[in-house]
Image (cartoon, rainbow, N blue to C red; front, side):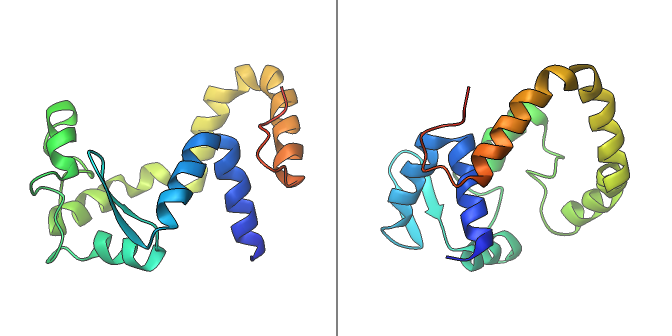
Length: 140
């Protein structure tokens, strides 16, 4: 296993210990698995990218697609529900909001008041993730 894979496993296990294990068990059955009453789990990165970038063969707005769930909540003109040229145009318009400088500024403004109480927990979690803990959960 490569270093990035170990890191990803540690982060995912720390964030969602039970869900991560469940998803890995399902994914062990194959790169594409139909999960009753949930949908389809695609665990192969190449196949997932193919689905997400093939607007001819796959749709966000067809039966059972994400648009059916999100449109009533967010409206029909969101990145989650738009496809093709409209999706690309909206991504370009919103891109400036997600530059490293803008994200850093928002995080500093939102997190600075809480950073003193979070810092101890973050340091403990970081040590736990880097130690390669075997899923016993982050330290409290």
